[in-house]
Image (tube, rainbow, N blue to C red):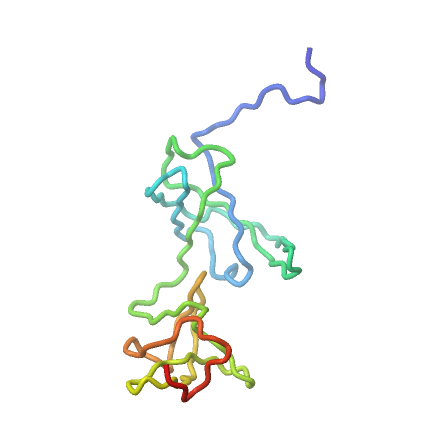
Length: 173
């Protein structure tokens, strides 16, 4: 005997699975149906599968955080390009969606970049005489953990990663 409100069986079509992902609102205008996606998961090992954005929901969702600095996301559906036995319902996957490609871009981790009292972005570099010099920079595209540097430094500069707050221009290192 089964109560009328209790679910007894569920039938799923595993050949028609999709992935629902949350896109940060900052990128939501850059994502369109048909945009390519790379799908990975711990269950897939080193394998990465491809798919495409099938649809984007017309509403946003605010997700609060413990620190009180929640974020707003847009939900999108990714359809894998092929079926695979590794794709199973409720599996946690990662989706990388490329909206723009810039060749030979200089990128730096966010930890390298500081702001001065006038909100100018800069990095500290070690000069040939081992002194610290502040280089004002202009940033471009933001990535998950890095940012594009448009001007102010080049690949030959020795940039200080995660500089101490007490570090000042002209100090010896």
